Structures are given as structure tokens and as C-alpha cells.
Length: 526
Image (cartoon, rainbow, N blue to C red; front, top):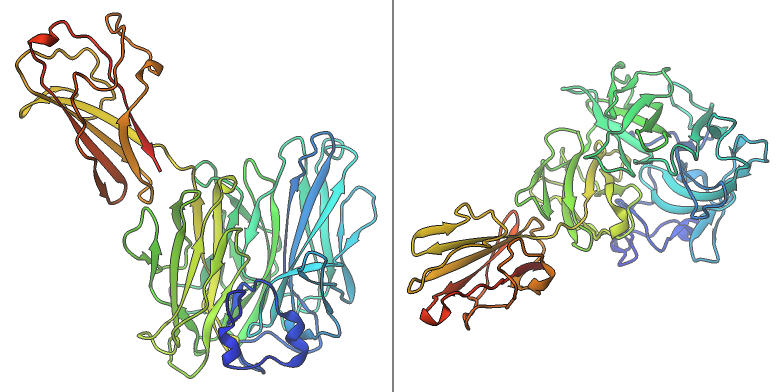
């Protein structure tokens, strides 16, 4: 396991010398470490194509007076192709970058007659030695003459050659994907998050997985997926669920590629070209444990991974999410077990892996910690698989983190006389203005605050009540607390939410006849 915080895998083996140049400031791919991998689950390592995967996304820059767009191309290539072909370098910003080439040089064409751009400095963001790929990201900035192409979108294309050998529906062939840009309809696109290679098995109840995107609020609109090529046994429905309907592999595995597009009502559609590795039923595969621990509101119990559909957890900016994943090799065969993680969102880190993963009782554990920023509202997926040193992996799972604004607490008041309720008996009212109190009786004002964010704190205190307009003409003055009474100590409780409660005893005497005053309170979170 390699990461910026440690190098657990370095104690297990040392990588070949030419791979020393691939050490990154942050490596998102956590894998078992071996020097040589010639296994049944690996992709073809011959002299064929090297293209594995690609997606594109875009956003308009902050320059309101221009039609300038920032495009990002994310692509994956054969890791074992060697340093003499994809030469890594350190950029001026300290990133590891590489120039990508091919039989037909990969290029980005903007569709407006300007010269194409090439992958001259792809920043390496992740790699998997056992699955034989590395992931590179390059950003291009382009200014169009007009917001769209005479009423139609500008069509930007990414193309090149060649795909990895052995792909049954297009091995060693070229690829071509497009996305549309119309700055009069939207200012940014969706973004797809996925591993470059997804493993499935043709067993019951039918092999499938679900793709994930970021960039929208999933409670307000839905992402709609469509198939971009229909020349293979892979299909995708509108929700992003991919199913395989082809024959079982006659060898240890079979490779297929799939081109799909994802769009929504407010975001431009984006392409995704991935490889699906269909493992033979007899091939030993790692697997996730069925329960995954999530330490964040609103979950107090493990999330269940009984299906391959993605699962979602809600978080608030500034409040950390911790998720512990566990996986193992179901056959118990001697093999290193770890994780391969797709591009992580900003503010997310993964731990090194502990546990052997060789048995269900001693799984390989990895913890994800994520602290969202306020500008990252919406869906933020984290996709990963469990992999072994033989290049075989479990089917990708995606944790869809839904970042929502931190809600303010609510405050309710009620008034009682002994066991009898006098005002707002249901406890849901925000005012007891106009309540009549009788001399010689004792009353209690009950204040209760609720914050839906169980990780937050909440307090109740007197407020500057002159800021709250009165609804009654006789309330001409304002005091914090009446005739020297005092609020009780705050009582807190934490469960699916966090609550606070305080009481204010009221005992009007003969000296308080005709008393009319406003007293206001507020609930504040941390």
C-alpha cells in the first residue's frame, strides 16, 4: 500500500527500478504489492493497444465576458507499457505528469476549426499495478468565438488509437467520444466517477453494477444514462445500471468495452468509455464484506452491501465522514488483498490497509475520511473495489456522498402550570405571546431545540428580542428574563439528531400585576 502518509507495501516488496519514477505525492490506488503479475484476471499485457478508459467533463470559467471553457480529460492506460514509452516527469507544481502517445496520437478537437490539443502533460492521479493501469488527468482551456455553434452546441471530441488487445468488441481499435457545449443553456457538465476496469462474474442473480456521477443535487434532479455503442453484450438503463447478457467466458475471463453517456436537465451530458472484465464463474475473486461501517449522521448501524447498487449517505460541510470498508478473498488462497480507489474528491483521504484479507474473520480494512467544503454541495461519489495480487477484483461499489447545507436548529416553546398545559401543548409552537399568567400560581416555560445534524451541538439562550417584531400592541418593552427568574441548566441528547432543552420557572407575585413584557430566546448550533 502506498500513500503520502506511509508505505505499508514497501515492507512487503520493492518495485522494479524503472517504476521508482511513478511514486506520487498522493496515490489513490491501494493494492497488494508484487513485482510480477501474470495472472488469469489481468488485462492483456502483450504489444497491442494501451487505452483502457476515458471520460471528459467541462465548466465555464469565471470570466463572464468571454466564452472560455475549461475541459478535463481523464484517461487510463496500460501501466506495464514501460517507462521508455510513457516517460513520467515532475511538473513545476510538483505533480507527476506523462505524455501520452499511441498508434494514432490521442487528441482533443474542439469542433470550431481550431487546431487540436494533445495529451502532453497528463497528471497521474492513481494507478493499479495488479490491474495494470494508471489514471491521468489533463486540463485544457479553450475560448469559443460564440456561446454555441449557430444555435447548435459545440461538439468537442476525444479520439485516438488503440484499445487494449483482447477486447472482444473492439480490441486494438480506435475510440471516439464527444461532449456538447452550449453556454446559453448550461455553464458546466456532469462528471462521471468510476474505476477504469470493472470486474463482474456471470453468476446469479445476474451480473450488474451501477455507475455514479457528481455535479448535481440528487434530491432535485436525476441523471439519465444512455448507451453510446450497441456492439456488445453490455446494456445500461436510464439509472446507470449496467447489465451483462453475453455468454460465460470460455477462458478465465473475457473483456468488453462500453461507451455510455450521462446527462441531466441542468447539466450537459458527458461520455464514459470503460472496460468490463467478465470473470469465469470458477475464478476466485475477492469480495466486500456485506456490512460496511459508516460513522456519520444519519446512520448508527452498518450499511448493507447485499446488492451491487450504490448506497448513499448524507453529510454536512465541515463535519467529517468516516467509512470503514472490509474485504477478503473468499477462497482463502494465499494472496495479498487491498483496494483500488477511483479519483477521490477534494478533502478525502484513505488509510493504509490493515488485516490480511485472507479470511472473512481477518478482512483487509480500509478507512475513508472525508470533510466536505461548502462549495461541494450535491452528489460526491467514491468508487472502489477489493483486489488481489493476481489482478482479480470484486465488482466496483460506489458510496454516493450527498453533501447538503448544514441546517439551522429549530426552537419550540410551551407553557405549563404543574401537570396542566397552558400554551402550545404540542410543543411545536415558536411563541407563547399573549399567554395570561395568574398571580399566585407557578408556571414553567419549556424550551426545546432540535438540530437535524447529529454531529453538531446546539444551545438555547436569551435573544435580543427587540429584533423580533411584536404581533401585539400592548408589548411595548422587552427584557431578557422576567423578575429575576433564571434558566435551568441545558440538557442535551444525541441520537438521529441532537436536542437541547431548558426550563424557565415563572411565579408572578402581587407586585407583578399588569406586567406586560416580551422575552425572546434563540437556539444556536456550533
